[in-house]
Image 1: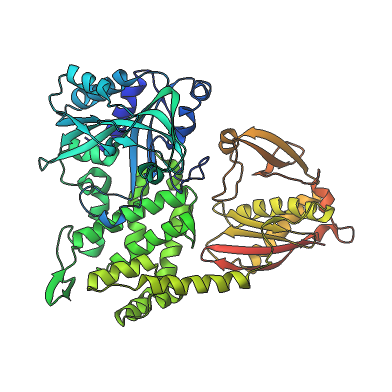
Image 2: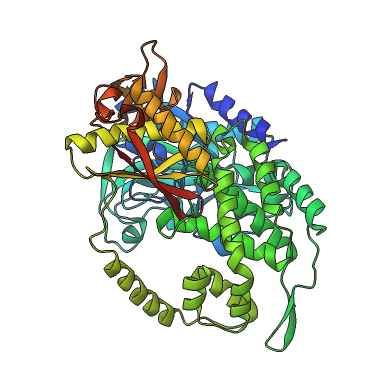
Length: 594
């Protein structure tokens, strides 16, 4: 069974049983600051477990189903074995007071045994602890369905919460056999009966309080790639059709056969050892797929938070490929294959921005990789590798482990702390982004800022996206995603474009809109920024109603572009004074109004 068929079969099964099919939310959580990524299918529905009535209002149903994009990097060292991935899809059905344990278990049983024809090896149920009782109800339901092996289990079958707080409760798990005859957990059905006011770590330590929820919530999760592996009796998730064409392309370009062991050998404790080439190839594929989705959802490679994780995965893949002497074009080819695979399901992977950003990060890192590896082989201080050659400490530790020695992490952390303190001191008092004030000149430059973005997209290309802004009474500054330095001709054309719109006396209007509606009409937004459910969209349009610019913004702006015109020389009111690089793939323009 192909991946597209299995995904559709799952969603159709629940749609036919009264569930609203809800699209996957972004990997970057929109309304949950407690986590970096969406790590589970339930995360976008978290709020409905404490306010179930809102589900009926938002989805016209208390029951929903989805295939959710997820990222988990806690098991990154395991990525490349038969089952672990850093990016995966989670299939799930959810109910917010619409049905209870019996319906949830019956749905799962029917889908596994009747729709897919898979025999269930065994199931688990929660044995209870403290004031939380044993889940005898789930046990009885499974036995009535004829499942012979129903097992009691402890804390492993009490799920949640995600992040620092949230809904949680006992679970029942379904196990099926893989191609090797091993029992593998494929579906976890969570009964959200409680709200936890602390993290899972605090809960396990007895430092968090549980309160009973007024309504039982159903939250199920089934790893899509793992299920696909079992349905097709494959050895690993990497042997499914998701990776099939990628493997063929890698073999074609690199002349490496998937599963080969090459001369990746080294001496450890006096013995000759090999690095598993197949595992390296799996890591490269996994990480490229992950960063494609990460960057598509707004996580640009950087030095902090999500950006750091994105950067680390890219650089880890580059180092693995370097160790196999793979050609540079391998990454673009792999990305192209994944884009082709997913573009119909997740169209935003095919917008060109993610691919460009990833390739820039790779190119930037490759420029220092050779020198960095030479320094590593000299056992150079990992602090120098990090600050001079861009080696994340985790990668240095991983390389060191392969070579049989350990990095002094305490010494590294001490040096980095001192380095960061100096960097922060040097940047004190630097002006932060946005408008400095609402003075008349600042407001005019703010409107000119909108015209500038529209001009860049018209002259340079639609892939130009705003990355940040800084506006005061004297000048505007825009950071934007662009893959090259602007030519003098391009800058002149941009200036002429803006000045033409000033001269044509275009109206500037504002409209409050639902976020999703604003996205549908193509309103521009700052790349990677988060917005509330209701947004203000500013339009600049001519007397025929043609929209020259439409952009998410909080204002304020002038009423008509003619207000930007210079009294001395209205034909040349707008002027670019500087264009420069900020970082790899990000340019900066400073401009003024005469």
